[in-house]
Image 1 (cartoon, rainbow, N blue to C red):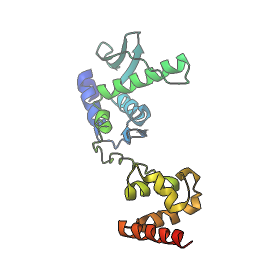
Image 2: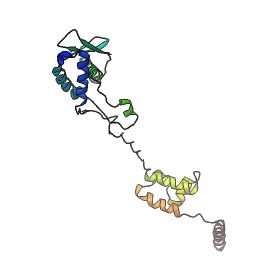
Image 3: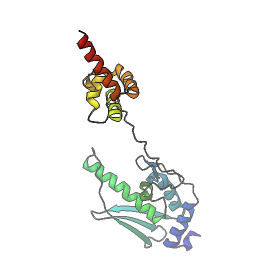
Image 4: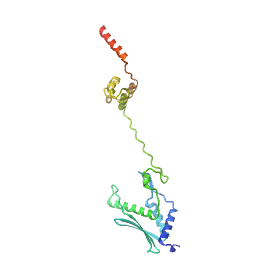
Length: 220
């Protein structure tokens, strides 16, 4: 049966066979929560199918182009070539040769995915927070709530009660401390409660206090 098929017919059959397999994605990008195919996820299956259909694949690289050639071993004049522009990777902490190896691995992955019509969700969609392949987008991180210090809470209570201009002068009246910085943390809650219920003497009461003082001075 295979003798009657040319390289293009064989490749079409190979693609069809690969689609029936339940390929699993082992690659995972932690940042985007994106799952993708590693080369090892599909290459063993491709090699097996190529052998069954009397074909072989060859990958080559130049400084500008990466190529994947599919050859019909029953007629070596029949071949299909897939190409991709060469890129480069710059992984931190890696030697130049390691970066080259990384680049070639990625190029091989994309060439085989191109040749055998292997489809996966678009990585760009994952970065935009869309749900793909049943994988939910990463939930937004909760904002960290910074609680004010006890001394800051005292100052805030003063401003709310007496206004910004009278805040520190009233602190001395209420608590005997000249500045919130001077207040021990264990005293802050008690002072906040005192501020909340504090009532300034009315003008009438102030007048009675002055008359009473004059009376005492005269009596003396």
